[in-house]
Image (cartoon, rainbow, N blue to C red; front, top):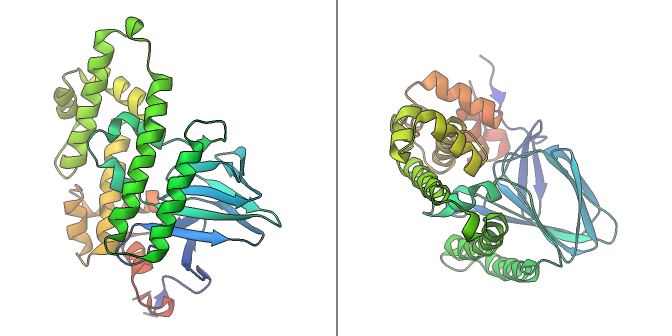
Length: 310
């Protein structure tokens, strides 16, 4: 059978700081060695058509403005603001003459697995547009600039250093989010607090035990609620259903294993919590736009012309 290239030079757009891999509207973010973060600087007019990827994208204008459309809604980000675009969200980006910006892409799962992050899960899965009048915008921009200084210096433990900044940033944004969305103490019923703690406990349980046979009945018992009440609560606090959260967690783990290890696909499937290889392959393609084998080829270090299969 004639060999076909999985990744062609047309799929892979080269830039000074690396390359972008596109398959239709799906972008696969490639990171530098031993990191899960990437910085793209741009000072010439450009326009990215509608695309999506599994990384968070931070728009940090340096001069002028960046215009973007996210899930059909238009935004303008100025050089005193910063915007966080959540993973797996369709968006466009354009920049006019005289503007410059940094784009920062990183893997949210590296933070989402931390104990307590579930309290701001719904915030992290939405668009965050910090404007100048926000009390934390200036501080967040400053921390991002400091993080990029470290990124370009490439010291030892680079990934840990960068994520220490990102963690501080999410703590700042999370405190504002929780303050804005919490009810006054005198009107907040006790069972509301208990529900919040129960959902946090469930999310942390899933993050640790995703490879186990977790069902709606079993996870509802962990929370201490009926499965019907639990389903409503989980969606309310996380912004997604239990089954969808578990599925995305498993696929996220699989994507990490495919891009960072040489494990056979069947072992990746099992370690991610899938009992059926065909289900894993089908689900992975639905969420990433390619098969697990094709995804691994994207992240191999060989040249594009070497990514071939029988």
